[in-house]
Image 1: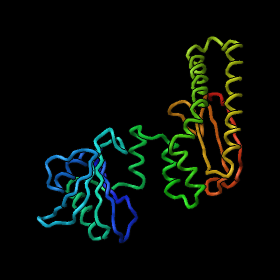
Image 2: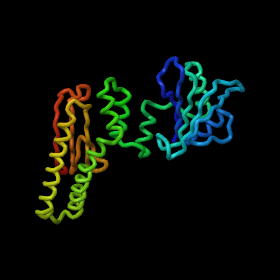
Image 3: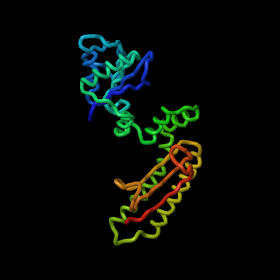
Image 4: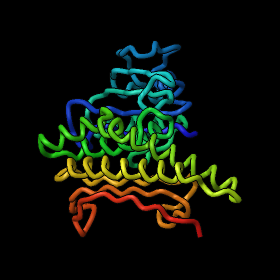
Length: 254
């Protein structure tokens, strides 16, 4: 895994700028850049960054060791003065020491990959950053704190139970599912439909949300033997139809 670096604050001139690193070389790069031996984690340190024996800037350096960090990796945050020239020199020096520029959203992607956040929370971070109204901020903050994930968790558990039953039936194709089991699956799916419809109705006017559930490695376009749930809000930027509703579809294998 490479070590990534990016400016975390908006581009342009300002009082302060924050540069963030994440990856296996983050701590080594920071200590080399600051000419330090060891850096105590989770404690801000005032130090000078040096390049070619010349001081670039006096900064606040903070380190977070894996897995206790935003991304689950070693993370370093450098708070420097907000001159574009200063930021450019620091980032250039970090790249010389082995880091690579982060892609859009890559810090959040690494946090998702390392289990620090789930997909709903990752989307909430994006929504919070782009929020322009108090209502949007409130909704994104609630989702980022896990409200949507906690609401969906019971539905997920019920669907996993159904998937387990269906997979067991596929393993023993010579035997049909007993009638009580079929009724149990129908009742479980009906309960999920009712719950998702209520949740979908409560999301009217909220950002569009779509959830696909199915067997591992199955395409969302073609899901033989899979379960699919789709929840839609009336967010125009995500859907042309603007439909609001929920549906569950059980598709047989082909």
